[in-house]
Length: 268
Length: 269
Image 1 (cartoon, one colour):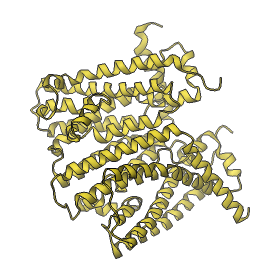
Image 2 (tube, one colour):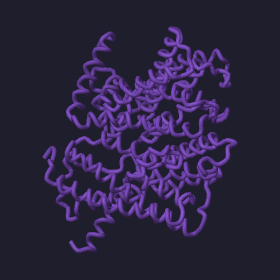
Image 3 (tube, chains in turn orange, cyan):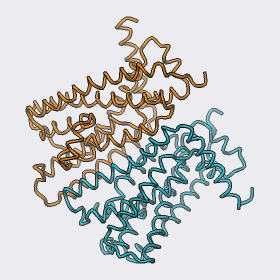
Image 4 (cartoon, one colour):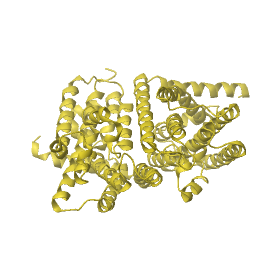
């Protein structure tokens, strides 16, 4: 297949992924309601914790509330419950058909996951709108910070998608992957800083979290957006994201190379 | 079939379901860890938050952690025996529910034994552990009566959650997908039932007592044990009776389920 055709095929997978999200309107609406309630409650919790207090660790109430709201929205877009159909395809043997397609399996799944993510963007937007109505959002300190946080969001998305893919690959060995996925999902919810920003973590915890790829998913873009991480430090965080993208890509390639020989077509 | 064989039927079906799940060893252990990770992150969050801020809504960590532990233990009582209820809406959508209707066993019983929710064992482990640890650390002078009340409250809480989930199962017969709704219930209960619910303001608190009866799961009985009933804008007698709410919610949920079941339409026919 020529590159142009491959790109077309990839876009086809992405579209299919998006459609798979958008087709369940009812789920989308309840998903939006869920996120809004979560955002509203998260805002309430942080406002209550701060009630009448000055800045804690140099972070004022406004920043902490905005962080909680934005992080909840970003998290809900990045880590949907069913982010990949790969485990299901391996289990029911559909993987055989997938492997005969002219587009590599990794790209197929990557395209589909990207589609799911795009399909969930409106959800995140609704969550952010709710936060804005409640006066919980703040603007970035300047153009540079705003732009850099956009770059960091893309970096975070890449890191999240690579992590998701690597975890899904475990299915080639275990056939059932709901366990690892759940550990991953909830572990990363905390470690990505979407429940609580790294600023408030005790030193030892923060130091360990900084060595993991998860903080690159949520903490990095949001803290840059809010101007809590600025200048050289912000650039360094984006650099860390880049390093993770490279490392995880290599890891994914290694895992996939071994997985290829593990493929068992069930029900074949 | 005779009524008294219900429990036996349950045991047989649940054992088969457990065997099916144990086929995947690695998954068994990781799922168990998944249960611990899911709830553990929540506890970690509360620990970090209160470690920094000291109080939330006037409650300290030992109290909040106790409410959290009660909630977790209640959750385990729902999720270990009834956890596979969450599969109902998928079964209704795929038409697998046809099979349920053809068998001579109560449909509800078949639904709860559809799949053994392995992750729940992690929840149960953490729930019991947390209840013992945080129960001892909570500012409560434990007497046999209080322990009895605690047990009743935990069972009641489990029934509230089961009732809510059973209600959703009933809803799945008329709505195509209740997935998000159930995720919503799960996440709200997980994320917010650990807080002193009165801190969200009166209107929200009353909603948690009626529309979405989360307050009964652990918060209301916990205020009784912690001697904080004065925090609650309800008559003390009602608060004290809160463990009974479980039965009420469950009966309501189950009635709704049986009322809605005849409206099931087999897809593709």
